[in-house]
Image 1: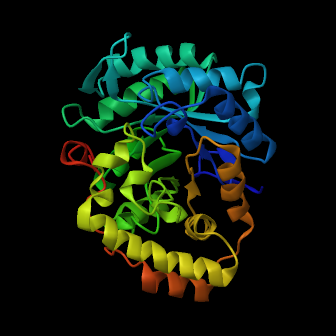
Image 2: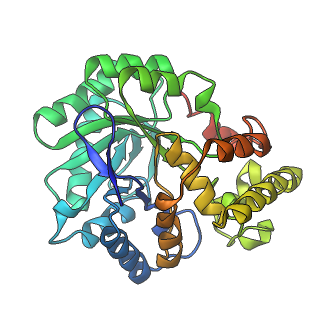
Amino acid sequence: MERRALGGQGLEVGAEGLGLMGMSAHYGATDETESLATIDRALELGVTLLDTAEGYGPFLNEQLLGKALAGRRDAAVVATKTGVEFTDEGALRGQNGSPEYIRRSADRSLRHLGTDHIDLYYLHRVDPNVPIEESVGAMAELVAAGKVRHIGLCEAAPATIARAHAVHPLAAVQTEYSLFERGIEYDGVLDTLRDLGIGLVAYSPLGRGFLSGAITTPDDFAADDFRRTDPRFLGENFDRNLAVVDQVRRLAAEKGVTPSQLALAWTLRQGAVPIPGTKRRRYLEENIAATAVTITDADLAAIDEVAPHGIVSGDRYAPELMRTLNG
């Protein structure tokens, strides 16, 4: 797999990364043995960017990654996140971008990961009650102390990104971006990243699995899978979105690739580093094969016709989570 620069701060990663959240939380049953084998296989295939957060579990996912990287820490670019507060016992307290919490959670993440540094440290959500300059200032202190190599934001508005970047250069911004979610092309985020030389990390590049083409009914989800409450998977929204997926599946078949590979190759063509999440080796291998798929201008035009901005029905999250976006 080719490597590429992520932003303009000297961070280099494999063209495709791996989102680890589902290995520990939110997507039904977990299997540590298969998860560790999936991380092993990802590293073998050239994946370097491994994405976690203290809130995934909470803490379980960071601990899983620490176990996977024991004895080979330098094989990976470890990305984790702060800014959503948890007690040491794992109780959720809500957004907290205060410098005190950022410092405390960074030390806790280092312990859970079993490392002395975090390669890419994100503010998971922007705290509306704390000036972004204060949050990023604390993250910059962690860089100066050697605990963090690079910093970034998740789900931030253009003005917030610019203000943060002025305090300390951002390596990356992580946001949802896929054939299902193209809002950053129209709300100024993508333009801001390009103008400032900040890398784009695309989470949910497969539309939370919808774009894989494997989901045909909400009954496919386990009882504890959070997608059962995701607006895009509910009622009429599900049926409308499935019709879009059918068109993507048709284009993929014409090109001789899977729907997942077409969707990921499109995201790569946009200059993003996608971090599709999976907890199984067979899906990992299918996803990584997308890095060898070429998306032509004709492909782009065909994709734009079937999956233009705004085609998807339903908000990205339930209302209480929608309020945390675009800070």
